[in-house]
Image 1 (cartoon, rainbow, N blue to C red):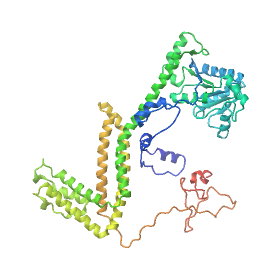
Image 2 (cartoon, helix red, strand yellow; image 1 turned 135 degrees about the horizontal axis):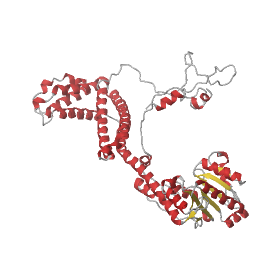
Image 3 (cartoon, rainbow, N blue to C red; image 1 turned 180 degrees about the horizontal axis):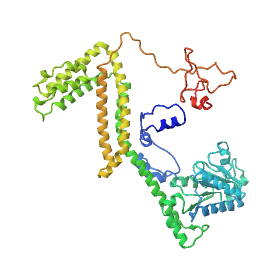
Image 4 (cartoon, rainbow, N blue to C red; image 1 turned 30 degrees about the horizontal axis):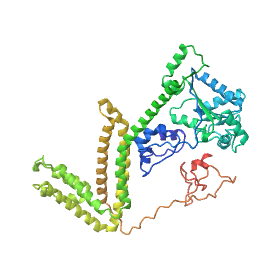
Length: 525
């Protein structure tokens, strides 16, 4: 659509040609190509339905090595986000003064830094874990289980690691004291759309039989609550004159929030399943094309395939013209011969008058025989070995080119197929039907284009075989400017000592580093 090129023009860089899709596949179909699938994760149970329906993978829960004694408190629901943040800070201060380590999970870096500023004003020392300080993250994680440690992490940065009580390496006396205080306390500042991510945050505490606890704080104007009955909860709290700093705590509310999460998870699953249903249409076509392509790449002899294509195309054209419903004297034999001659020039010598009055089967046999004899003459002219290689190259290039065009056509079909629902028809069924028609048309185009090229191919006598293309190593530039530095304007000269060749942004850099020019000296240009 030219958007990429417009941005390149705006930024003053070289405008590249529009990219073309060469192959597409969804993650689901990519994973299903493996003969065996398996995985292990602590949060797969909530996604069991998708794993079973998409990948046919049952989920088995492995019991914990030691009993899990973490205490998960019900959610606290507040009227406003401001009241929720004040309550979170108060709980952090409370546990910090007792010396208990606290891990706080936030949904974004923005909320992460907001809470950090509030704690700074209260004079609470803490560590930030938000993927901004990579070099210190390992140290922060290692010491998150120490007495009085406060760690604020985003949901992405705060998952997948274990906090060792008493620090790492642990000090026995300090670890014992932390256990007496109740272990690591996890505070979630907002419910995520997926229960899996909330469970990952809770799972930072109470590992390997250690004590621990967790609690989530929710506001009626949080994103999840705003979509699912947040206004109703806020109006109830306002009716009972519950102020901003007074929460509602009840297991029923926690269950309602989890039910809302299930609805969001189901919605995202339906979206992924919908995409997969459309890609399954492409997946069938993809398997057929790739099987044919592998046959061309690794097959020893394609002669029989080409002869089969010749016979099928000629007979198909004859059957389309010489039908039983049409009287023989009305058959358009002149048009038939002209159409076949466009594919196979030798058939232009066939006299349509000689075919009149003959049965359709005899017409097909005569035209097929003439086409096969013409191909035999082409083989004698070029040599069997040469023609075998030409067949391979022509078929491979034709399949690739037509498949790329087909992907573009299928994308165009996919974009507008949803409008068929206004006609009270299923867009998916229409996509399957029309996609099949496009695929059959593509297969026919591949066969016709292959014959058109093979019957017309010429090999120059005595022409040497082209040398294999070798990647040219970037030459070191010695004509540096007087200052001795690598000037960003420096360019390698052409082999004949002619004018300097301008490097594209994606070309290998002239310095020999192996990086692209835009990532190396092009940065300074």
